[in-house]
Length: 426
Ligand code: ADP
Ligand code: ASP
Ligand code: MG
Image (cartoon, rainbow, N blue to C red; front, side, top):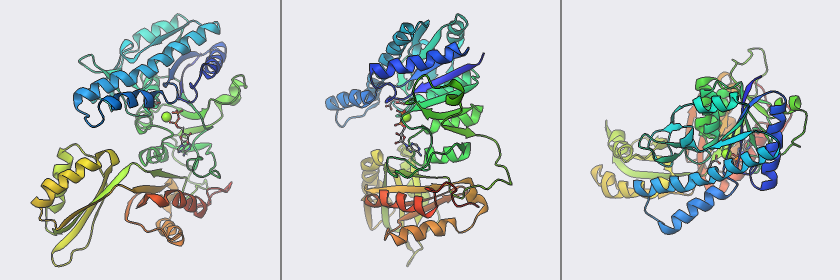
């Protein structure tokens, strides 16, 4: 008998019919002899609806006090889901009990709207499992040291499920969603995208951090740190499909070192991110310490910086650009215009919120040259101008005008043969 964690996303929980289907599927796993912990998200659209209500009453102000209430409000979406799913499981003849994060408890820090899980006490859950119950635990939420309800950031139910699986040393964590696995890129953007039967943990981490929303990045970090066997699969297969077939479907995140002899695709996937904005300081003095003088105050304001570029200097002056999350764009511009720009004698501060970042990811890039240039050629053939470039061992990212995003993703998908059964190999 194995302990298994199932996570069901918003679409999978989107109606009472779908919740009934989830319950039937979980009941099938129980009947096959497994102990089951189930982590559902709020019903689809619900978190947006709840946060929208909060925004109506406080359109601009996101003070810590407002953020505390936003978490209290958003957390109710998952609370409804767990109750409904527990009832549906009981209707299937199961003994089932639901818990909100604070009841487990799932302990987090106090960073409202993006809290981090610190520990999970599994005593109560284990006792229920031992008594033969299915335990249904809210995704996306926890409780901070002062007893405030917190949420883990959008898409955070993935992280709840993996963290619970890690804490309880579950045999596997299955992430059920509205696609049947991890694809070479978002199939909503490129219909020719193909499902990957496996993806390495490192690649998944890059894909998630570069904007692919199929898994929240922290869930992948947890899976890596605690070696949680993780699989992404569809909740839309018939609930009564053969359990062995279901357990082998979707995409498995693998941890093994790649087989040296195995032909490895150079590029495994393409990620994109519309959530960034670019800011530029023109004509700052090119002298030691200038990067710190610019980025120090930005970091102090708790603004995360992503891609950075500094031009070659002319007459002792240089231009300096970097990207930030689009939510931080207005704050960053204000800081540069009022403080950093004058302090560094910048001749001008410029900003562009309409950019996006497109990235190619693959561990095959380690052992292969010319991958980035192939990327740049494919983009130039489409007349797409590259504004910034950033690379690591297994990814190359470019910042481009937002209006070319889909074109760029499709062109790169084709250039690296990702629509073919056998992608270009290293
Ligand atoms: P859930 O509500 O189940 O958590 P999400 O909407 O968070 O579902 O994630 C699933 C969605 O992720 C898919 O519908 C798909 O459009 C999108 N997606 C983005 N990148 C990928 C990818 N590489 N492979 C599969 N799906 C992807
Ligand atoms: N309901 C939350 C959200 O919409 C968490 C999740 O779905 O993973 O972001
Ligand atoms: Mg999700």
